[in-house]
Length: 292
Image 1: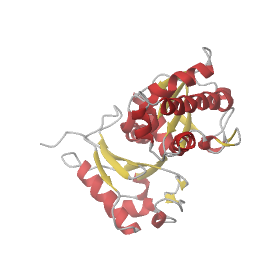
Image 2: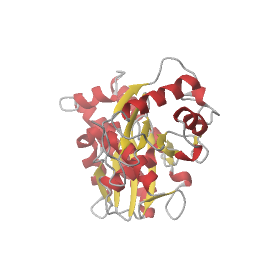
Image 3: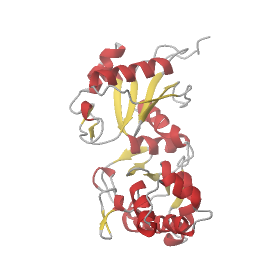
Image 4: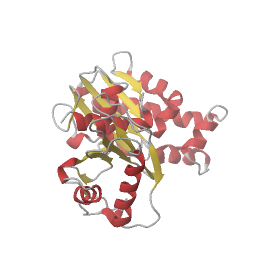
């Protein structure tokens, strides 16, 4: 039985190793069942477009035909035009006009396809239906392979203004003897553990060991101290009411959040964990779509 909905849209989250897609049923931000799949083995733009079309078609099964799509993509990316500028990731998409290609694949006009930075989509999801609901000024920080960030005022993303770094990005801001991402990322945790133990591990394993391994526990506490210091030095000028933490590392928040809060003190902005987690970018795409 088909769901009754006048004009659903497709929303996508293009992640580090897989893509998620779902139908959004309207301004209430209700999502249909999510469909997820790893990147296709064939590394070509044609294969990737076919992959996105197939994934969206599966996500839309049982719904009225979608009237467009919004996709959360990592940068560098020309979001206004719909062209990837990434060399290091998905290099076969470099310079490809994904807006035109997807519109053609679905039989839409190009204006029916939109794009959004993945960190911005995550924050918009939390503003619309998650941990930042009701906040006038909010920051989202995603902690994972890299350090993503986004700033929002009155429910809209901003990339300039008082306290907003260029393009709303904090990953490359100077911090200690490097940049922020050198201290707030998966590779920072892995490097810290390797430096102390000589053992090469991954973040999930280090987190699991923290309950009985004091070195693993200290690695996460150090991460929390760095997070608190970055927030104090780089984010407070924006005067956010809330800072939402997402990304894979945030799932181990109990290991680093107390250290971050201790570093900040009682007058700091509220630090909240993502309420929507993996769904946040999809919901954020819907927020962007229906607030146009």
